Length: 151
Image (tube, rainbow, N blue to C red; front, side):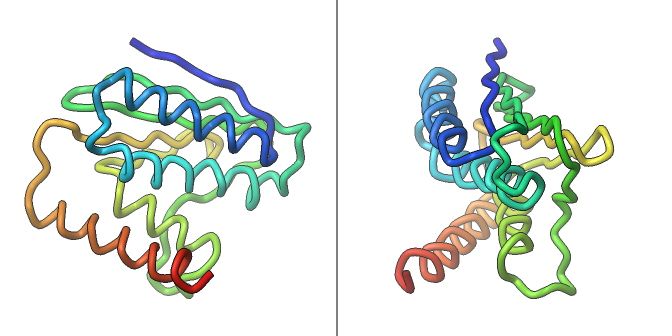
């Protein structure tokens, strides 16, 4: 099973992506992992919209979701500018680099292709090792403290 959605690179597109992620998590029975999956996927969407495309609504992003071995995936294909989704430990942990950090720590697998125009995030739904689960919890708490509590 695969489904896809094409969105404009603006705030309306982000809202559509949010609804798509929620719907797909429900269809693939990933409700228990919704927070992890939506956080990583929507950070990737935000990186594409804001940092790659400069919120230019003429640009389009395709968001595809489906099942993969042991879980599910979201694949983002940006038709405009490429973006490097690689987290860099030598850079300050703010802005785009914080988004990259969140993606790299919450997704179980991250694959870039098509010279940075395509990003695939995979999420295990059947058994996550305890240390990895604690690491995810720490990342979400850190994000909450910085972006929710201080806002």
